[in-house]
Amino acid sequence: MWISKTELANEINLMTVSGRASERLGRMLLLIADGAARRYATGLEHDEAVASAVCHLLGVIDRYDPHKSDAFSYVTTICINRFLHMRREVRFRNALLAHVRYEMGGEDFRPEIPKYKNCIGCGKEKPASAFGQDFIRGLANKCKNCNRR
Image 1 (cartoon, rainbow, N blue to C red):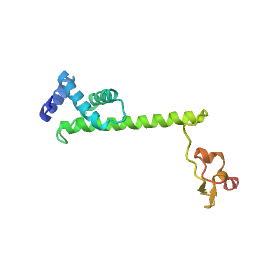
Image 2: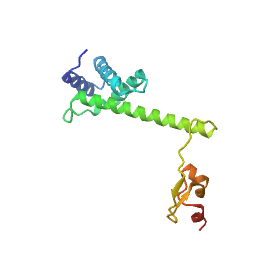
Image 3: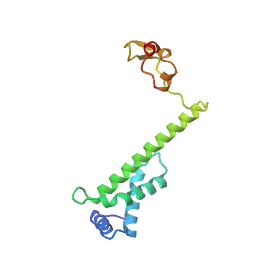
Image 4: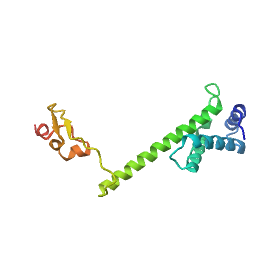
């Protein structure tokens, strides 16, 4: 099924006037989201990405302004941004789970700990052991000697 820009714009305008989305608009949004997901939702569950994009579209479709852009560009951009948001969420969730596994004694996640760091107190480059346990957690900026002063 082909979707023309004018038909899509008319359906969106009809929805903003009536306050209800028609079945035809739903099919159009589903087709656009499905096509965008095939190209841009790599690494995500396809059906989940399409469903999330369509739900998000139905929530923000009333913000469409025909004077700023055409309807097809607006809908496609919203879908792609939703896929990118979902990808960031998955990446964050995986990093958090790996960190929790590491804290519980697993070997999946090893933070990269530099061997040397510059102390902001004295300005000298010192080994990581001079900063203590807070350095490993990323909290220390001063060496032990500067913290004692």
